[in-house]
Image (cartoon, rainbow, N blue to C red; front, side, top):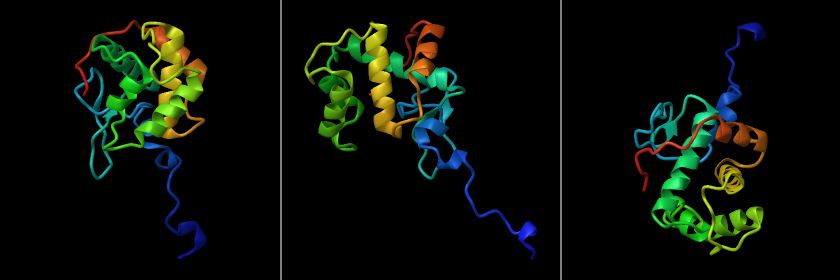
Length: 156
């Protein structure tokens, strides 16, 4: 076999991206029947939602944060304790990193309807879930301004 005919053993660029980015789901939201989403494919244990566009995934994360607020979860500590429970994540480190990024204390009450707060939470969560450099603030802003929040099925 000549070098030109050798099978390509290198993974494609898409497979090198974090799972949440591949799924257009920067928050790694579980699939719970969100409108327009489907259960991710191509992984051994599918769990997360896959959205048609990154903007859809950003808005789904915003909507989840708003649902948390409706349940009285309005601090970083309260939100992340449910969002990234200690049974699956280093929750304390997650809370600390997110608070550091946002410049708030873990028990500071947040206005989850405030666009700047939504933006900061989404940017911080996306970084915690996928690593830095995958989601820019202009991309978040564009998604948040493109459509109003829509109630969707609640996620635990």
